[in-house]
Image (cartoon, rainbow, N blue to C red; front, side, top):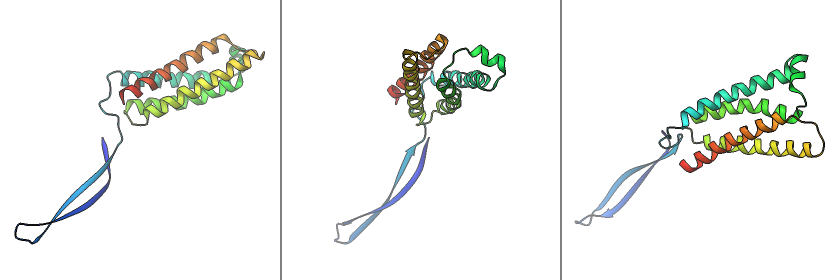
Length: 161
């Protein structure tokens, strides 16, 4: 879908066969694309998976952060920065899922932002673990899945654009 953002009238003048001035008026419209061209068949199922992924991330992060003593004990040695990032990222996953589902032009950008920011936080997790901060191995596994999921979407969308 394209949205009309401007129209410009252009007048062309020339001399006719009898020497008189001929003027022709043309309109030129400028449009901005708001959706990706011909969405691939994999986009909508992946958008639904991304939405479910976001909801699960919000639920698990919210339980770990705001749950009772038992919920916090089940988290183990979670790194607070990673826990908060993942919880908040869940909301951005939902935004990315909507962008994917609607095939918006900014779906590629949001997938890159999510993927690269997750990779950055994953790098921070690795650094703090190397310096002796206790961590959970399941967090490493989850970060591999999150990073891979969103970077795969970003790469695939970039190739189809």
